[in-house]
Image (cartoon, rainbow, N blue to C red; front, side):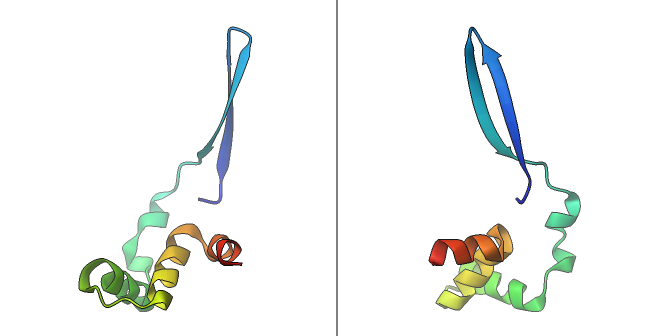
Length: 74
C-alpha cells in the first residue's frame, strides 16, 4: 500500500485526477511469511472473538502499516 499511482485523464477540457494504490506483488499476500503473533491476532479478531485492543492494532498495522496506524492514533 505504500505505492500510489497518480492518474490524470483529460476529457473535454476537464482534467480528472485519481490516486490509486499500485499493484501489490504476490509476496505481500504470502501467509507463510506471517509471524505466529500476527496469525494469532488475526484468529482472535476474525474467528474467536476474544481480541484485545492490542490484537486489533496488530492486525491493522499488518494491513495498513505501522506508521499509518500510529499517525491515525496520534
